[in-house]
Image (cartoon, helix red, strand yellow):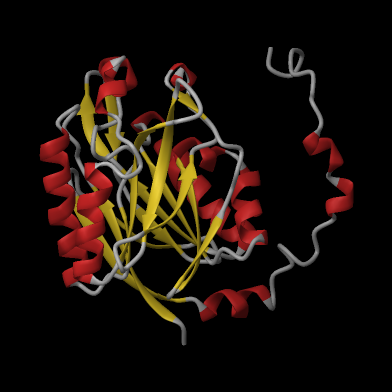
Length: 279
């Protein structure tokens, strides 16, 4: 068996209060580690909170360099607890005036192993963020992982790209609204079943001036079945051990990846006239 214990951190952030949010995140990560978690993930933009209409241009001053204080603090913590931490936050982009909405993977030695930058921005978020167009996977001591951020999960293509590169666990870190609660469950289950991978859906919680982030972080198995879900409001920690050997066992009987016809999917990569479709 190839077992690994995951820690999904559902967190209620306080808008713009980085010191308070980081302290809470450290507390929750310690809790997950004390239960044996070795791959631990926080929700989207946990250190500032996610409500861009309210944060406005203050987001620029709240954002950090990649080697800023938030990642430095979590790097020290990761080394101390001997666990990987996925830390999503807004960082400054040295090549562009806009920011990047990223998830930083910190290894169990406290070093930054890699960064994923959100590609599918929600609504008017492109006023603040730019994208990378890249979908990296990361090899850890416990298996190969991919990361998606919130709206990336709305589309089947990102998860498929990650799976084709060998991702065994996809961490989807999000600030997902109550209005789409049904889609949160559906997409997490679909992405897992389509690719026969584990999906860890980590959602923020909070009521922020008309925006209700509803939590319900969950872990989904490679058949698309929810193994466990956080049902209480507020900050919470979900810790669960999975066996990555389940992936190979399921893929023996599932045609999802091996029977693809990529030569027939060229239309997916072409521009389309959506005017008539979206009326």
